[in-house]
Length: 202
Ligand code: GRF
Image (cartoon, rainbow, N blue to C red):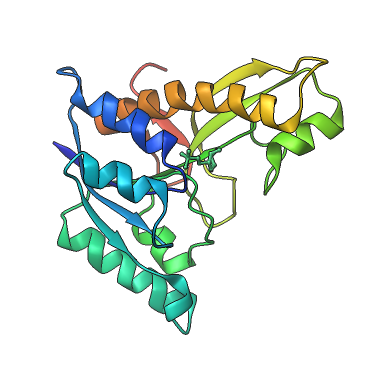
């Protein structure tokens, strides 16, 4: 089984992935949930589901390299083969990203490459676009720039606020992330050495 670890904030993407891996068709298993902050909802969701959790509080580390090194040790301890980031608001160092290249996915609440960075939903509203969405991509050294695995578009309504749009995007995320997990977990989609997607289909 593909084993995976997650970092999460409120953990709604974690919840969606937990549902996904329960399906008989899924080859994945969530073996550990890691958060860089104690007490977040995602840790509670994992514990309630009997999934092991770890907190690696970045404030306790003198450098990003030390923080990433500790995360890496936890991933190795659990035999993780695929890392899913959701709401993990830390920039990871080059060596860590290179080691997990092709084995680490992130979800971003816009149709990358549009609206990289924080407040992607707000950026879309302010840009006046009528369509935005979410992107699941391999994590690359450049932030929000890795090869794209799955995207789902959502409309922006004239009545939308940042909250109503974020809610609609999150619903799309809860379909896109499980889909991406299965594509990568089954080997249907791989990351090539040149950083582009290699698929069996085309
Ligand atoms: C999502 O909006 C995701 O796009 C962003 O962080 C949020 C995580 O939400 N990376 P949750 O913790 O999965 O509910």
